[in-house]
Length: 175
Image (cartoon, rainbow, N blue to C red; front, top):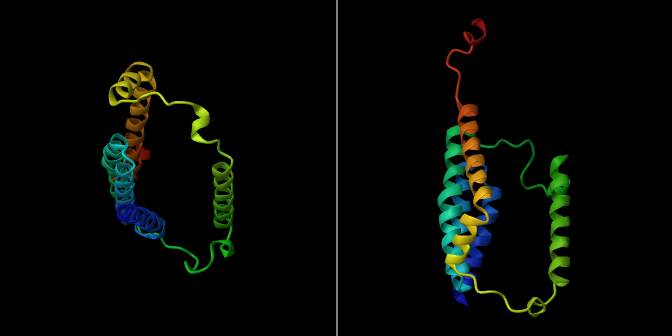
């Protein structure tokens, strides 16, 4: 039970620090720490496959891609026009909308969890193994899997093109 509290506290604290950081590189690194803590929680839930997938897919691939894009774009430190100690509902425009959406999400989450049927209402769950997941992924869902990889590739090429700096911006229009 101690490990659960340790991993849960690490996940919550690192997730809160992700949104509190002004430097995007630190935010990405803290998000990797949060994914690691979630992986530890999956191990405690006796779901080693989900834990390994959490590390390989999210912390290993997607977060490295985020870190690559952030460093490629050379994103500057965020400068805010307001004092960060002010309550979100007291901040201007989009922040009030974001705070209202967060409250709405919390209310919806409480409602969904309180009105969910018990797990026994669904009957016995089929046995799921790595073999069945792999077979389903590469037979039934092969096309969506490949389309997703192409979309990620296009997003990376787009990020590279957007980050590229024009050396001779004045000569471009003279051709």
